[in-house]
Length: 181
Image (tube, rainbow, N blue to C red; front, side, top):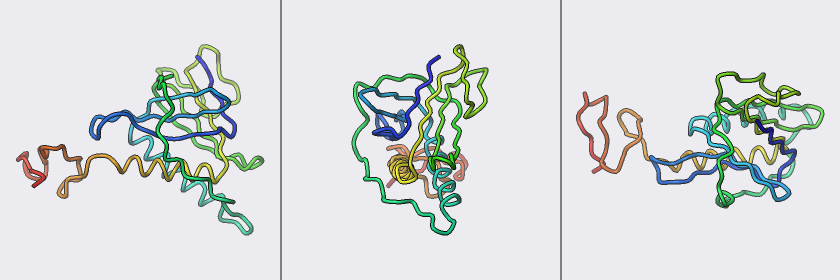
């Protein structure tokens, strides 16, 4: 399968297609006229954003360290045409101390995953999207990802599960329907 590598891409964003409750989440990288879009789960986007912030807080906490100039916010839609290159099974996150870059690797869902962040990826292995970002670009990705995840359905005040337009069957109410009213 293909390995899509982006070292300091022009754009790396999380985005969605569809209405809350039925959205499909994507990670999308683009540079030099090529675009790679992979499907991820909402929780993967949320965890990736959290882990990026934790990683940057840790590695940039030393004396003289700082995130540098903030990357501009990217509020634009996903690039079209939107073509799914693969569905992500696992995401790995790392720090390249020599280049001072965040490394994100999204690996295709497969029965036989490869070692995360490995130098050599077998030709017959799963698809891999590998992106290397500056700390400021990684923070910008994280901010947008958190915002997109938060645009979903509001949570039930009792159980925290997402509410549909008609409410939902709330486990805290012994299966009785709770309305939004």
